[in-house]
Length: 279
Image 1: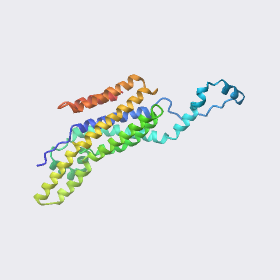
Image 2: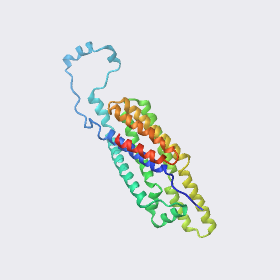
Image 3: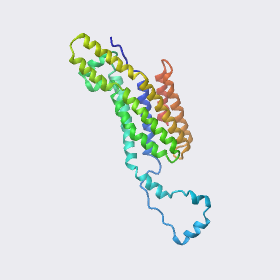
Image 4: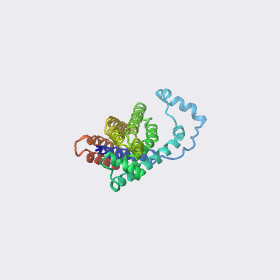
């Protein structure tokens, strides 16, 4: 009783989120022009009235903000941008830790095996059940907000929609990730002595692992990928990245849906992450 294995798509999910963080890092932290706002240039008052007379009428109704004002308004969000950059770096580090852990401590193939590992080596047992994805999804919150703020000047509506989709994806992954639920069940399993009680806990553990392979994960993965495509489309219309850069990201995101191809899906999704790293 209790045959179970973690869905191979979980690896694709973690890889995709790590690539998303690399993109956010490059957008937020290493964007050209990242500097403290300079002084607002002063205009000669003697020429001001002449400038107003010569200025085209359509500019009077919707004047562009001076560069100094733009930088000043962006300066209010510097703490969020830097927090997001740090979160992106931590996410990439967690990605490396997860990959190493997967090969050094392969996850057990049964629910009973997970319970035993959680009791003997709790941290490793939690990592094998994707505890790091919980941390990763929390770190995705400032990243998503910062991306939305950076791109809102290009298309405010789409930036807001992308933020909402990112929030939905984060919630789905947090609900689906089995690590903490399995830890609680393993503690109950160790405390109960009768075979009937243990059988019930093994069945509960099987249900928890099945939920990680079920609708919450699927919705989170699809919605998260759509969110990424929207962000990339807005980037395509911005002046921050070249069109080639945005197209590479879009292609990699579309390839990410290859995770649903039977048998080879996880390898296709890893290929999409390679594209994201190039991006």
